Length: 447
Image (cartoon, rainbow, N blue to C red; front, side):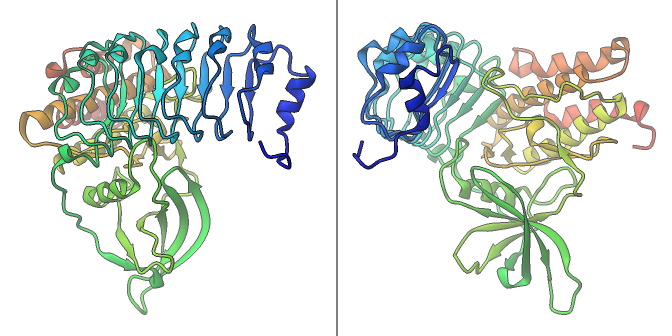
């Protein structure tokens, strides 16, 4: 640490003993070495965030943090995942994103590992021990140099979310599509993805757009409101514009997200692209998208540290059956359209579902994890992986439903059919749309 560098106020408080009993600690650095004072919290500390502190190693006695459950070290410089992580008996979530990792020793993987993020590194090989962590549920590997996965993962009983985008896979293991609980996967930007689906949208010159207020910002880009003059003399149309940052995200490369959004085309239940922006003054890549009504909202929050791979709903959310059916049918139609266009959404979640907040009109958004489907039976197998994601969404919404449980029995049967362990027995999304339409015809006569 430079002699003139400011000292993190949290570190000063830690040294004074002001943080006794703390369960969550975040140090912002810069640090020359791991602070020994952290060990004074060994009896209580459960979450430790050392991201961007400039660390290159962890001490041999790191396992003294016997209650530690979550560790973030992203943005530091580690060539090797520290083997001492395996000494932490309760450690379940590890994040080493963008640290320059090349090696992942098996002994660095704690037995309770549930969520591992190694995005944007230089890893070429993963240890067999990864498949011997029975609680592994979420595995983030985008932006590495992997061309294979450990065969031991074939038996991973609880793996639900897997990110493999922007690696070096010439083929994907055949057994991946048969993991019983896998529901969300992305592999765009690998040789295995093959060709591309042709976009069917026009180029939109930046000069015909008048950008306005910021609507949102995520890992891949910023979304702003704008008005669009398609032709000189025509009235301006309100739209949304997404400008991509160009940085690696946990799902993969932003340019692959843009390509998928373009390839998806327009559909009433997708936030697809109206056009591709050209001639931006800063050379930025961007998409023109429909502007949703201002009162529409996201259906749920993204997964938390505790929920891992499952969305977090407002505990007060209560849905009439008709609204729940409209939401799930809207998402099913959007997903079925993507599958027919040769695309897997890869992130079919409530937190990527935007709805009107009342009747249940909804759209599926965010193509950051979308991948090009292979043709034939292999593509159908991957479609049934996404069927499980939809079935989980259906179950979550039925849990929020105000109807008597007896009236939901047939819908619960559909849920079970979609999430069953036998992937080959799950329906395709087009079949889901058919099955659900019968229910919605009864519950929503105006549909």
